[in-house]
Length: 187
Length: 288
Image 1: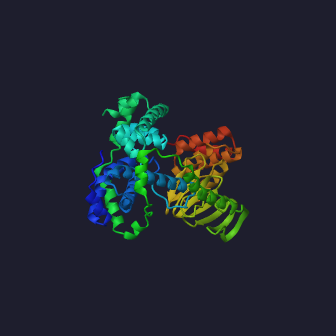
Image 2: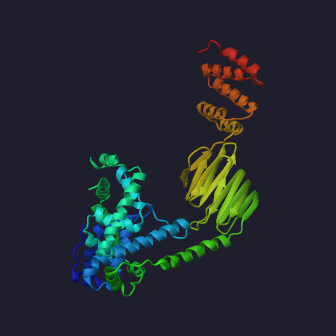
Image 3: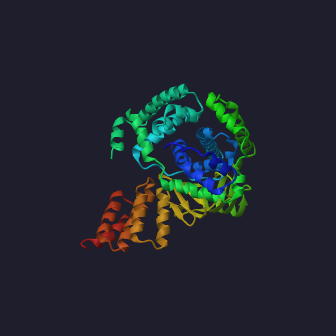
């Protein structure tokens, strides 16, 4: 899933409060944002909820973006920040029941292999998880990932190397043996 | 590609967001945008956001532990306040009538028990009779009621607990509660539902059998309850009475063959009614 080019005129129309332009922009980015949310929010948050809030942030904060070239990185940072905010709220909800309104927990994944892979992924620190999602799941070029994350190319490579090693170790610990992959990934 | 990376690709395929999911988000967004006041509640854009993003593109972001500390401080303060403000609860509950346990918890008693814990998490041990519990919703009250037969924990707001010969009966008025009967997995029941935790001793089962017998229970229900009681440990006199009761129920139900077996079981173990049971059992000999 690649990020669509952002038309500067579309951004200008969104800034002016053009409802149709806002809907067009949201429709263009929702598949990408929803995919990021699905893989990054962890098991205790609903990706659709987070995605909705990201889109609200994008449409209300678009004024702060003057250079459309920076839009993909800006969008990723908004998504990342919103995920962090909602994870903190979830943590607070668990710590102080009743302090915040309750939200439903998303239903579990039915595919057994996918559920175990997701569990291994969720066990990683966020910085490792995001680099695996962007590089190995979405197969983005490393330089594009570096631009999205706002880190040098070398940092992406070293982080990816560490993340893969850690993921493999966690996956083995979760009994995600290569044999299981053969059963689950081939219909 | 390593197998583990293939596993990640598999996950990406399985959890690929569908068009329906995207549409749900867009529909909800459209509703949000139709309410300008909802957008007004979104955090105000921070000035210089774009410059910060561009700056991140040029250099890695340094760690900012102070952000986490500043955010954690109010949460820890709230937690501390809850602990400081909570004088312990430790008193007997007896008699009948309403009792305001705390500002958020009201009890309507008709029996006896004891409350311990804190106003934020009262723990009621209920011994006998009925107690109606009302908890103000969304105040984070972790209230529980325990009896010999089970544990009732508040998830919702209002419920009744009655402890009598039948065991512990939990009836939910509104909201939800989690009930854990002795030696059984937890179950959640919601408004309008009732759950009974049966007695856990042979003597308790004997009392329950007599109570449901008076309520007109069928022979099958009575025999099942008696068998459950006989499976428990208890005084010999109680077990003898349960065996005698089993014999009586089967005779009255006309199930003669089973009654003869029940009589044999009673006579094998012995008991004060041995003579009369043997005599009745003899009249059943030869009957189908």
